[in-house]
Amino acid sequence: MEYYQAPSLWRRAENCPILHPEAAKDCILPDSYPDIHRILYTSATVNPGRTVFSAGKLQTEGVLYASVLFADEEGALHTVRFALDYAGQMPFSAEEGEYTVVSDTVLDSVSARAQNPRKLAIRGRLTVTPFLFVRCDDEPSLAAELSGVTLEKKLQTVTCWQLRQWSEEGIEASEDLMLGQEPPISEIVWSDLQLEVTSCEAGEGEVRFGGSGLLHLFYLTVDGRVQYANIAFPIRSSVQGDVPADALCRVMLIPEQINVLPVEDAAGEARGVELDFTYSVRVAAAWKVACTRPVDCYSVEIPTATRTESVNLLSGVTGMSREYDRSVEGERGGMTSILHTAVQMTVDSHEQSDDGLVLHCTAQITILGTNADGAPISVQLIENFPLTTSSGELCFCRFHCTVSPAAVIEGDTLKVRLVGKISGFAMETGTVTYVGSVQPADGRLPSDTDSVTLCYPAPGETLWDIAKRYRISQSVILSANSIPEGTLPTVLLIPH
Image (cartoon, rainbow, N blue to C red):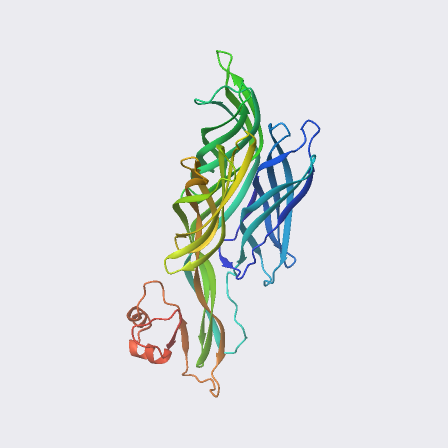
């Protein structure tokens, strides 16, 4: 387990570039596999590594696990898996300081091409959205040393957020699963596993999560027909994590290794499977803390000109969820029967609008089936659509999609209905203002009677409260600060 701990007081770096690393590998089929005749479907999962800022560059790395379903010359189906490393970097100019990076990694596309019957060229493209945060100084410093300046301290309490992300890999799990009404299994030719987290909570030194797993199977029946089945099962587990009980958590499960074996029932029919798999868990947690920040208040014996400076802090993290329901149509491309439908959803870009955060989404739909001759074929459909969610800046975005009902053929058209949900975090920033420099006004000399104090109004404090505290009238404060009545800036000059 590896922890990435962030400081408690944040300032977010602006204009952080998005990285688009690519995974590419020429893969040779193992000797036990037949030659490739036709590639039907390629899927992938991503196990993202760390994204860091170092030596003036943003750098990211990870592993893409690709699964390729293909047919041999006799029309039999086979699946083969490969692991592809990826890495990417981009120059980024940022000021010196202590940094931490929180990132979200999404698979944009994956493809496999047969260079010859024994060799596959696999390519994957990812989008890594980094959020770079800089540790803020606990105390702002005075820009110039001036005679006649005395320093006072005021403790200002602001709301901050702690962010933490960590991962555990190689977690072993096993499930005994039964088929529904499908015929018994003779031989398994392809399997894929999806893991989805639907709930998570923090407390007692751990993060507990629940969700579901969905095992996809292509197998041969006893009479040699190709059959598809999917089997769902519940997930309930936890990982160790020192976060408070009120933390907002997000958990992502990534399948690593999958092994599926047929299991016979009491009648001797293989109507069940034994699923052994390993997976990794990636956890992102955020929780609110109260930070007491010492703020410099300068008492100056001469009239002053001041410059205020602001620090942008991570001030809020909110959960984000939005359901969607889409209908997609496309040409059937000679397909006469449907075996299975797979969907990959991505967010291509996002922007702010008056209604909130608009996500521009793409659904890539792959439909597996057979043609009039009974040969396996596949058809791909693309659907682009917008989704409007809560306000804030997008962070940690994931889709959950179900195909309901399964794709149907109507004449020369394929029709698919997509039902699902997008979830993640949206974050917002706030500011803390302080005085960065104090300089004497031009043409004025110090005198024994000139005296000014800088006042930082507390949250909810009124001008009347401040005037009462310093025992002067409200009109004197308004005149000294040249502000209209009814307004209250973050810093006030209090004359004596």
